[in-house]
Length: 257
Image (cartoon, rainbow, N blue to C red; front, side):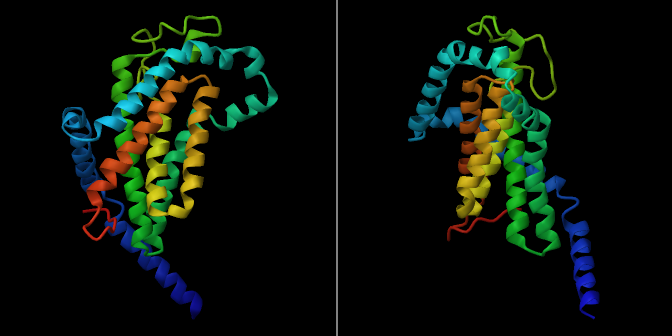
């Protein structure tokens, strides 16, 4: 009898998911479109408020890291570093494909599990994380197509790391260049949502995002400046756009409206 009731609850949850969760594309697309308007309008509005101070700090730090890229990046290109057993194994595990699957699978799993468990807070968390990751990817991809910065692996161990902008000959749909790191931006956007929704998991969420960002440097896909700016971009998009737009007057965060 208990087994039959359990099966009935699962069936009801699956039915609810099929009716409501399988076709959220229109609503989520509208939310992302509204987010993008706010994000791209930020440079125009920043001068009129106090946001220029943290924005200037991020830009200043990014500029300093860009200046240091020719000094610190060659170390990670050396065969002596890349052939270390620990580094070789780590780079295989933390590959671009594996990290992308992790970034998108976690919020998607929360989204689906929330419906199956009939837990609105869980599925809304997944929805917010998916929205934030999509916002971050759109901005990162656009910037990479514009700046066309060569990846460290393109430059090579003995190349000129000071002349990388607007020089890549590689074209990819997810961004021709490498500034900023899209993986890092998405990882930190997802981590920020989980840190806000589950404060006790903040260290874990940001720790995993930090590992993903560091892996982009170790695998020679990005410069440290790419990763730093990507992290700042992902955090800012989640904190000041995605989460802020769904905050109710009583401080409760909702999603889907």
